[in-house]
Image (cartoon, rainbow, N blue to C red):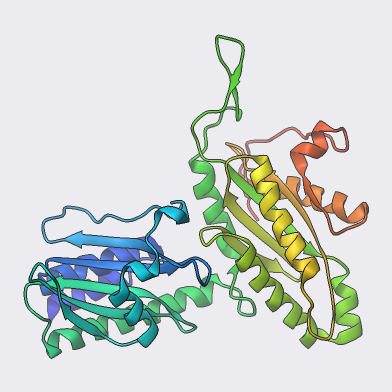
Length: 346
C-alpha cells in the first residue's frame, strides 16, 4: 500500500502534463510489472484522427519514449490501424485480448470531463486480474481528477481554450528553443541561409465590431459567438497549435510554421472560415488578425506588442484582414522598434 501511495503522491506532484503521463506509466510499470505500458492520445480532426504516443515504457526501458508534439500528423498512425484501441475509445470500456505473440493486452479509456481523449495500454504475460484492473481504474480516476484541476486553472471556462495566465510559461519555453542570432545568416558565398531551428509565430485575433453584438443581442448571444469562434479556431489550426483566449473578444495563437507564408495561410484560413460561418441569430461576423515571428530574446510583451500593432493596422484599414508585422515594416507601413532584453511579463 505504501508503494501505491508513494506513486500517487508523485503523480499529483507535477503541473506539467508531459511529466504526469511519464509518471503514470512509470508507476504502473512498477506496480504491475508488465511487458509494457503506454498512453496513446487521439489527435486531429474527425475522419483524419491519429494516434499520438504520449509515453511508453517497456519492462527494460530506462526512460519513457514519446512522439514529439510537433510531429507531422501524416506520420502518425490512423485510428483504424489499431482497431482494439479505436473500440476502447468509442465504447469507453476496458477491453482485454490475447495478442499473436502470446502476450495479453488490456486497454483502459482515458477521459476528461468533456470527452475520451485516448487509451492506456497495458501488455502483460498474463491477463490482468479483476483486482489489478480495479487498482489501475482507481489510479486513473485520480489522474482524471487531477487533469480536471489543471484544466480548471489553465483553461478559459467559457471556451475551453488556454487562458492568459498560462501564456507566459508556454511562450518562454518556445523562446528557449530559439537562437539569439537573426533568423538568417550570411554565408561565405554571400548567400543567406536559414538555420535549422524551429520558427514560432504569435498571432492576435480580434472580433470585428464585437461591442455591437453585445449591445444589439445581449451578452448571452455574445458568449455564444465566443464559444463558436473557439470551435472554428480548433478546426482551423492543428492539434498541436496553442490557442488562448485573453479575455473579451481577443484570442492568441502560438504555433510553429516553416515560414511566414505558411503562418499567413493558417491565419487566413481562420479568417475565411469565420467570414463564411453563419452564427445563429447574428449572421456573419469577421475577425482581424495580426501576427509576428517570435524572435530569440523576445519577451511575451514584446512579441505580443508587434502582433497587436498589426491587428490595429488591420482594423484601421477596413477590418476582416490578416497582416504580418514584418511585412508591414518591409513595405513602410510601420517602423521597427528597438528590441529590449529586459524581462517584461504580463
